[in-house]
Image (cartoon, rainbow, N blue to C red; front, top):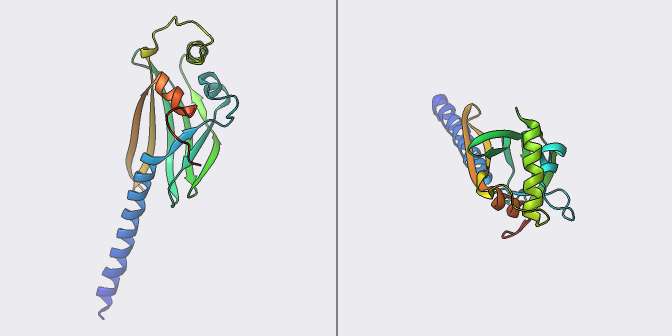
Length: 174
């Protein structure tokens, strides 16, 4: 076999392997599940922005690697803050509990909103603010071939995200 043919075959295998790994990461990003670190206490927006702990589950039988994971809180269409976790590697069929950081230009306002929505969604407080004004966006950033940015984005209403995090309507399979 010609030396150039061997080089082309090896290069093709490396390129194909990289593309397959990237495709698996994109598929995994669409399948991950989010949960709370303390099932008895349940999910609270206030705890997320202050304590910064979240559980991330990979229900698939292969590893997943993401550059970063963001939970963005929107109120009345305005970005109120971003909870972010950097460099996540998830083992197959497992979950990790990781600490992230919350950044906001109006932290006191976000704390007030978090306390209000926590009380409202848990049924311990009155409805004073329209629940439809709170939106949550999750972003998972995955590099394609190690340098091309790609992200998987999901958008939820505040109540839908609350229910998902507390396990209502979906099974947390880890």
